Each structure stands twice: as C-alpha cells, then as structure tokens.
Length: 467
Image 1: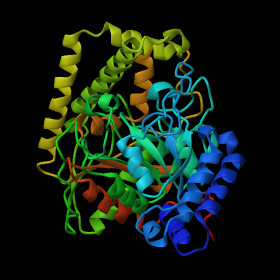
Image 2 (image 1 turned 120 degrees about the vertical axis):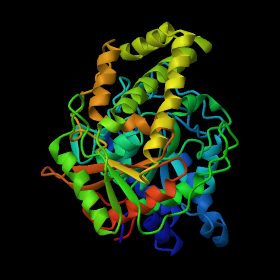
Image 3 (image 1 turned 90 degrees about the vertical axis):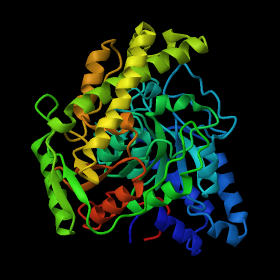
Image 4 (image 1 turned 30 degrees about the horizontal axis):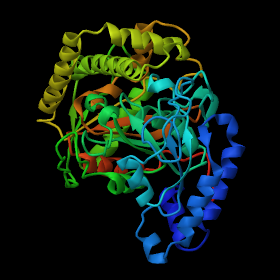
C-alpha cells in the first residue's frame, strides 16, 4: 500500500478513522517534528473545526470529494486561504490578509482538504532554500542538516516527514519541483493557464508562476491536479489538456547540464537509468545535447530574475512598505527592480516569448524531455544566505543548484520531478520530465510508469494512516 493522501482518504472513507482523528494525528506529528521548521503558522482550532465539519457532512457528500477530511497546509506565499494570514517569510508583512479564499483555495476546500496552518517559505520566495530570517528554518527530514529546498521547502518537509500527506505549493522558478526533489517527493509544475490565479492576478508574475502541491505519489499528484485544474477565468486563454498517449512516446534525453553549471555524475546517471527503463517500456529515446537548450535555459533564468525583481519593487512601492524591515538580499532585489527601465522589462518579456517558441520547435521531434533537476544532493542549511546584497551571486547559486528549473516557468510548459532511486547516503536521486503546453497528463503517465519500478521508498509514515 502506498503511504499517501489517497490511502489516507480511503481509510477515512472506509471508516478506519474519522477526519477528526486524522487531524489530531497531523497536529501531533507537527509537534513531534517541530524542529524541522516545516510550519510557519498553525491554528489547531481551525483545523479541528474543519475536520469536525467534514465528519458531520452526509456520507454521499464526503464520498464525492477526492480528499475528504485530509489534513493539509497552505504555503506562506500564494493562495490566499481565508483564516490564515500570510507573512511571506518576512517581518515586513506582519501576517496580513487571510480574509478571503482565492479561487484555488476554494477548490482545495471543495476537494475536502482541511487546513490547519501555513508552511515555511523564504522571504518573498526569493531562494531555493526555505530559511527566512524570521524563522523557522525548514530542514530536510531525510537529513536535518540539509536544506528542504525552496521556496516550498516547508511544504516538502511536512509531506516527507508525514506531518501531512500532501501540501499546497507554488512554483515561479522551480519552487515546487526543487523541494520535492530534495525531499523525495513528486512535484508537478502545471501548464501555464491551467491553475486559477484569481481573483487577484498580481501573483502570477507575468505567467511564470503557478500553484499546485507537493505529493508522496504520482496518483496523488494526478488526483489533486484533476480536482483543481481548469476553468481559470484568466488571465490566459483556456488550455486544452491532451489525453494520455499510447504506449510509444519519443523521449528526448538530456543527460548533463554542461560545464558552466555541471551536474554530478551520479545525478546524470539516474537520467540515463530512467531513459533505459522507459525504452524497455517501448518508448523511443532521442538524444538531445545540452547545447540544444543551453541558451534558452539561460534566457529563462534571466527572465525569472527580472520578473521577480520588478514585481517585488512594484509591490513595495505600490503599498508604500518599509523596506528596512526586509532581509538585506531582499532589499538588493528591490533595488535591482527599481533600476530596471521599461525597455529592460519589455526586452525580458519578449525574450521569454522566444524561449517558449524555441522550446516548441525542439518538441517537433520529441514528446517529452527527460533531464536532471538538481545538480547535486540537497545542500547544507545556510547555503543560500540572505544577509548580503550580492544578487548576482545569489541567483548564480540558484542556477548552479537547479540549472534547468526555470525553463518550464519561462516557457509555460508543464514539468514534473520524482525520485528514481537513492544515493549511498539514502538521499533521493530525482529527475525531471517536461512536455509541451497542455501535456500534463502525458507527464503524469510517464511518471507513473517510472514510479512503478519502486526504486524510492518514503522514510516516514503518514500521520494517522493505519498500518
């Protein structure tokens, strides 16, 4: 039996435990694993009341919900979820908002999720580690001296530790996939325009950002995607999702990331192992040299930097916020955003459009692209310090750790990461699959095939799940 949200949902549906008992188990696990720093804000009373309300619903209503009674966490950046004010990892925010649900939050609740807190993120999501100066520091449950990744690191730590079986996450430059890869989870960054971003569209970051979840299985990822996707009402046209393909797909294989941003041999080899596994499943391999995507990957990273810089600068000035209350790195990013001219921003947005066009051309000859997602094992806590103003150094560190992460954000293409085995230290060996716009189900199909090999096993049980 897979230890995941689907299994927990079935246990609740079959009467093995109530929603309230599942919530009590998650709250207990949150206390047990408090040192991981996965949770930035918790309201046990709201969680217990939500679970009690779920138990009080008629059976037919609960059975219609794919995740009825499942305890979960929102991210302290994104949403928002009514009743859970966000700080975005910053002393500046003072737990603002949380007055109304976003469209996505409404769908989370309609799917049956019971929220009891918000997971840790770095200040304004500016890092691939989740270690805000205000705390807590999100640590990797598999090795607490290592980072859980960012910016959805708290969510990934909570799910990997079994505090919750699934958690809300966001991705503007790898922020779902990098933490999932660090913690041995499945993370899907959906196609641009598939997930709702309203009623306020200022959190979609010119289209590079989207929201979904970090999960313990591909089936959970598919189920939460199905529950939340579609009918977004802007800001982009509706995306036509492709059905699953037949048995034979053309798999482009990028097995390294070049000499400037190299990936370790072990993490390149797992891509080759996964390619052989897919070839044995009757898919066709198509070697793709890193040089074919090197330039557009670099442009993607630059577009990400420009967009987050100008967005943060606009947010600070529009609401007349006190910059002195932010971390030094955040201040430097704001300064960078303020220094960008209209021409700079326009150039960056146009360059991002060309990324999408050129990536589409690559997919004329392939159906999916298989590549590394992380260049190394999860990094030690403190590897992405925010007490300095060198933005070039900071963003280079991010690029060096996840060289191809931003490519999916700039292009709008869907991408999924999942572990395919473990290294000598027991840490996950993750890989990334990317497909054209609307081919999210194709990615889920391939990820499910890879998962079936059973090369990765979770280290922690799910709180409340009967054994």
